[in-house]
Length: 169
Image (cartoon, rainbow, N blue to C red; front, side):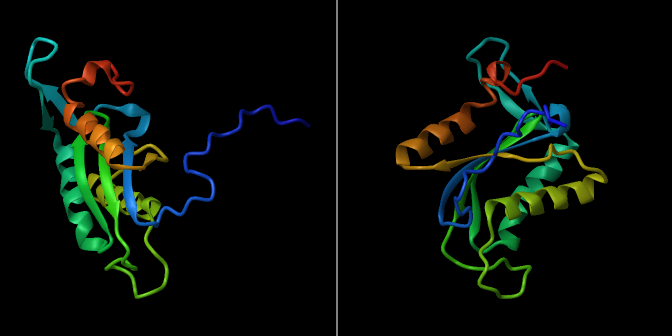
């Protein structure tokens, strides 16, 4: 019998080592893109300043974004924004080796492990899973790429109504 299901899109680059030192842009979405992390407030006109007003789930997520450096010596969150239904982060991975919560090994922590740990800590405090199954990642290739993504993160609240992850209430 022939399987007519569409082939699932690969989220990670094939044969890429996500524990390699460098910079990564990641996006983590809520399950079914439900708006539960923040509200975008301020500015009634298109280019007026807007800010992120964290809801309780967003405040918990921010707490764990900040605390992740307590668990990983080699991974640092450089920039982030907590949008109503997703989080963008720029993460730096350095050369060191093991996470603080695991015994010394030769295995490096990966971006996937980082995201999994982040989700697990949040979900434990939330009392339920609020995240979609996977996450989006982009390997930042150079300074220009970094600057473009940093600007995107900084401007994301002002551009919320044009964001591809935007949903109506």
